[in-house]
Image (cartoon, rainbow, N blue to C red; front, side, top):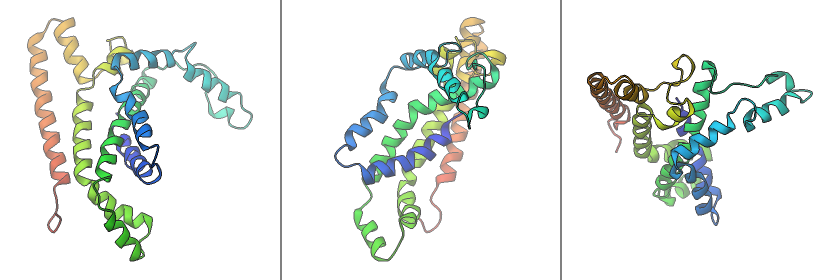
Length: 228
């Protein structure tokens, strides 16, 4: 649900940290990486409180913004039931997953950026290449192996997503099953409905689906003729 935006944010964020942060780089990276190493249950419970309809901080902020004179009309006037209404469950879960994993991807790309020789940028600068051209023709091609690795992990993790939606929706998938994931459905099939045979078959189908998507991703990132 939030896989591609993670990488679209993580790549430029890693470039900014790599270029602008020198002395505070480690502290900045640690702050972004902290959500990834924090307990998933703790994160989900924290966001369950933040998304609370009556007392959640997110609804309080929206309510405050709705009172502003010029932009207030763009915000809803009533509290949003983030985890109770089907149209809001997916955005809420996507936000939590995005917040948790964007730091992990940022660290991956930052590590890859540190392996790019500075001589390439110095030569490009002497040839008159702009920062955008350097990013497009030097940084992105150099990051391609790490992008392939990160996208593959995101695809696999997205298909196996379980903890965040399970806790946020109380293990039931929410209204109209809007927050139901494949892993949650397999869990419910096995342990709620005692149909272990079907759950086992679903797990094999998921395995094949992950293998096919990984193969397609490999084809998409496979070096073309002339590329190294």
